[in-house]
Length: 409
Image 1: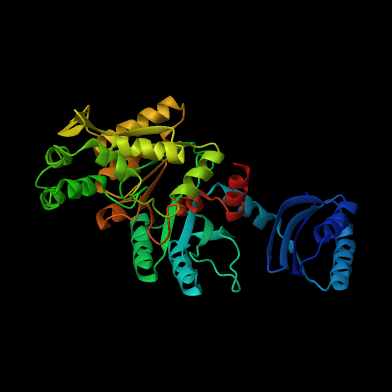
Image 2: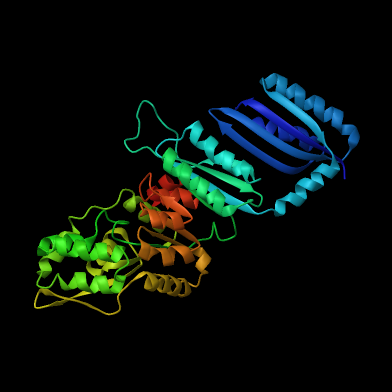
């Protein structure tokens, strides 16, 4: 093995900079062991770890690089690396890796500092930081600003539950979302995304809106509250609430579909994921008529929900088929993964309620969206500071990739 050197070049970026310095190394048959570069506001930081096959060439390379750096007004730092230290660095590449993503409307130094401190406390190292959202304009500010930064970290956390707990406290105090998941082969190879519908894809609970039209809003609310207290299970509460809808004209169902607003980012996230080749599904404890409407509007591949029984143009107060509850959602997610011939690790599940926890917990990436406190505490990843399109950043998609995929769609 020849001499090992670490070369760091910093300063104002310009076209052809990399080519000039790497050409110098090429003259001496240097082997590139590692290379990395970042450019922020037209200023570059270029790092090269190289093996120089002939020791006598070190001084020449040193001189040539310093000379070129001086001509270009760049700062050059070249230092030799001991072979023993290099081998330790090589062995460290087998360490566990995790992705930590911060989501918010803006990003402050205090927020990033809080997250970085928890990472350091758990004896983990930040290997890279990537900004996923676009550049912010002060002249033409975005009406709904978004900021997302992704950390790639290595090492084994000293206490994962405690780490998640601290991230939760930071989220609540600083008004940001912090996603924390393992970086593995499945992270960039996910194929299927399923969403809850009510209060996730749309900003309403359909059964509540139907109850208002039927004049039984208060009764439905009481049953819902009883279910939330654990006095009755989901299926029983669902049957009781549906029974109160008896006599509601069918045309009211059709009319309500156009009135309920989509959640912020729902259109963008579905359009982007479809253009990138993902399969999309709705797994809902709501109703099929609303699911089918969203399928036509947003392009979902699968819809599973509860079918209201209708006779002579009115709701009978019953549903047909098996009720879709939390456990059924998890079963459906497994079935869809098998149908798509993928691993459950290649799936993503997004929902807001307790009945979404079963599918969130088994998915490769489970996300609580604008969720109730109990759901957010149990889900490893959450979005509450921005729209549903925040999911794209958790997946690791950059703003420019989102724009490109939608331009091609």
